[in-house]
Structure formats: structure tokens, C-alpha cells
Image (cartoon, rainbow, N blue to C red):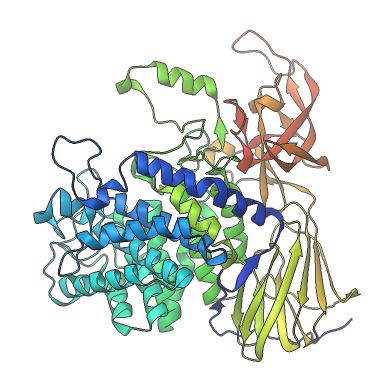
Length: 634
């Protein structure tokens, strides 16, 4: 079947199709969402209740009492509420809504008459409100804004939304109008993107103006303090945002800022800001990102460091940072239809983001290294505290002192359908693939689509139109796929790829279906030789998944010594794995014959071995064991 080869995909800014418009109906993500609704939602709630996060909302703590409120606890509560809202959006639940309403009522009782809302400063240091830039007031406010919007959209209940609008009015007066706070921009970005979200939900221009003020003022104020141990790069305040060309400082702060900058570029139409966002994206993905989509390579400041500095065993790769990276990518594809943004998003999502939670749904990683050596960790733990190096833990835990990642995962998985589609004029872009159906609004009218796939384990995607419509459906060809086949109603389609998308324009009839088949064979990748730890080594992927080897599956092998031939095709089998079914790869390799001597002459001989690999996101679900994602080549 031939289609118009001259189809030009509109350069208009894309419009988000959100999880409110789509229902996950099966496959990988339905399994994840069911797990998160049944297990993760309650597990995070229980840990927060045990640690005093919910009690802190009563603002009744006194000196000497346990569970002293912390400066960022409100944000933990907010993310849990937002996550709960996404599940309520699809299935109302009186008990869950009562839990959320009780938390909101606690906050309402403690809100100041002028709108101020923060459990830590209200309880512990009321005289210090808006005096310390480093203490997360506006960060907490941002997450509460997002929670308020999500809960209003899910339930129609707008008490928290009204509370936050009152608080935002105070923030606008104190920061933008009076400049009576002790600083000018947030130490931890988040409120900026939340304000743009609030603006788009309410249409109130004042929220857009305040967001613009915070973004545009960053890097220009002499009043914006930083930590004693840090510099202005840590908070992305070293330069005005339009002059920033490299990703610097705390990775989550940076990426939340870049999200707001992309929002600002889209809403305002400012081309300079769009180009700055593009430059920052390129710096991250070409020089400062792990193959797993992890970012922020050091624990010191949870930060980006310098180009190609991507160590293995000490990789920080905070779960929240990869969530923030996916959020930034989604905003970038709303600016321009370029497949590399969805490529990056799914690299982060299917690897580092999902590594952050156990397959049982109740334990979490804050850091996500790409190699693990239990002997190194055990020795480190045996040393006096002052002599220890920082190493990522090798077993997930139920809660952290700084427990930002678990509720962030909850809200992310609950809203995962946000990453499926966008619309520009009469063009529907299919970015990330998952089983779902819903109604999309185009300039030509409403289109109901049903998508069916076994992605990310299988490369076949079927999109069925359930309404008549003249429009373009542009499906993404991931960069990892070296081949593809596209058909409509079973007939091959000839079309020209445009920036990673295959556009198909036609008069769609209800029941028409488009099928895309992606080449999903095993692939091998080298890193840039400037990456010290992985120079001369290769990684293994299949589809969007990075694979790793664990000692538990390869008991007699020293994984660092395994050498793989990248010309092999390997074998793939779907196997039961800790309550689910996952692809397990088997590759032929060689290892050196073990010697007791510390140094030996080369050429001692190698033996053939079989190496088993599992998806990286599934590592550390069975035992503490060695793990590697990079192997010797040859």
C-alpha cells in the first residue's frame, strides 16, 4: 500500500495526551499498575505513617519528642497523594479517598491565615519561613500543587487545590511583588514546573508569570545562597538559564529546572529557550548519561560531574533523577517531534526507573549502580565509619531517611500513560508503546485508538482506529531498531521516516489497523573510549532493555573477566522470575583459567562458558551477588 510520501509533520508544538485520556488495558504496564495499586501504594503509606511523616502534618511536635519533622516531609506526603490520585482516576475507592481527605484536613487545619503551608517551619521554626533558600519550602509547595491538581482531576474534590492557590498567592506576593523573602529563587527547583501545570489547569496568568519569574531570575540574584559545602552550580544558579550549556549540579534539581524551561519555551513560543533546552538535552545524553538512562554519577551533591565521568561501582544514578529525565524528555517531544526524546525516555524508564523498585513492589533503591561487588561492600562495611567510601547498597530497602524515590515511583507508574501519545494539528505521535485505549482530540475531530503489544519484550505493535477520521498517525522507530515493517490492514506501507517517526496519513475507518514490527534482536554496544570504566567493554541490550549478569545465575564465573563476541546472536527465552515472566538471554563467552598468582604472563588460556543475563531492572531481587552490565569484548 502506498501513502503520500510527501506528508510533512506539522512543526506546531505538540499537545500532551495524558493518562486521563487513556486506559492501560493489559501487558507489561497493567501488571505494574496492578502491583503498585495492590502493594506499593499501601507499602509507602505504611512506612510514612511509621516514620511520622503523616503525624507531622498535625504540627504538634515539641522538642524532645520522637520523629522531629523534616524540611522535605511535606513533599513525600504530596507525592503519595498524587500517586493515589492517579489510581483513583481509574477506580474510585472510598477508603483510599478517606485517607487522602484526612491528610488534606490535617494540612487545612494548620494553614496560616495568609496561606502559608509547611509543616516543618510551622512546627519547628515559624520565625524562619522564607529565610533559608536551602530548606525546600518552595520545593514542597510545588509537589503539593501537583498533588492538588491530580486529586481534583481524579475526584472533583478541590479543597487542597484551593489551599494551594491561596498559598501560591502568598508566594507570588512575597517573592515576585514585594521581594520580601531572604532569597529570590528556590534552592530546589520543582515549583516552577508545578506553576506551569497549575496555569494550564486553571488558565490563570498569574501562575505563568510567577513561574517565569523564578526561571528567569535564577542565576542573576546576589541574595540566592547555597550550602556551605556547595557552589552555585549545585543549584543551577551559576549562570542565567539561557546561558547554561551543560548539565551541572544536583541532577534532580537540574532536570526539574529543565522541565520548567521546556514548559516555558512551549507556552511562550520562545525559540532561544527551546534551543537552550535542546543543548542541555544533548549534553546529558551524549556525554553524561549511563546506558541505563541513569544520570548524576556521584553521591557528592547527588550531581552531574564532567563529560564522560561514568564510573560503574560507585554510580549514583538516583531513581528520582531518571524519573526527572523522562519528564524532561516528554516536555521536549512536546516542543518538537524528534524520536530521540522518546528513545531517551524509554531508556530511563525501562532500566533505571524500574530498577528503583523490587519486583514485589515494596522495596526500593535510591541509587542504581551498573556493577556490584559484594566483597567490596562487605569490606567497606567492616571499616570504621570514618574510613568508609560511599558505595551504593546492594539490597533494596522499605524506606529511606530521605525517601523521595518511593512516592515518586508511585506517581510515575500511576501516570505512565502520559508517555504514549501527543497530538499536533491532525498528526498523532505514538511515542512509547503499551497496551492502552482512549480518545484523542485532533484538529479533525476525536479519534479513538486501541494499542496492543507485548512491548518491551516483543517488537510488534498494533494500533486500531475505532472511529472514522482523516489524520496522520506517526509511529516511532526506536534508534535501537535496525529494521522495521509497517502495514495497514495487512498491506505493506511505504513511507519516509521523519526524525525517527513514520507518518501514515489516510482516511481512517473504524476497524482499520496499523501494525509495526520492530527488529528486536540482541545488540551489543561500546561506550566512548573516554569513559574510563567501560573502555574496551561491551554492553548487551534487546529492545529498550539493558541486560546484566548476576552471580546467582553464573555461579562459577568472575563476571568482570567474561569476554563476549559481539557477532553472536545468542538465545532468548521467556522464563518465570520472582512472580513474573522475564526474558533471559544466553550468550557464549570465555573466561581465563583461574590462577592463584597475582600477576601472570598473558596467554594462559581461556575456557568457553555460557553467560545468562536478565533485564537490568530485575537485578538484586533474589540475593546479594555480583552484577555486571559491561563485559570484555572479543
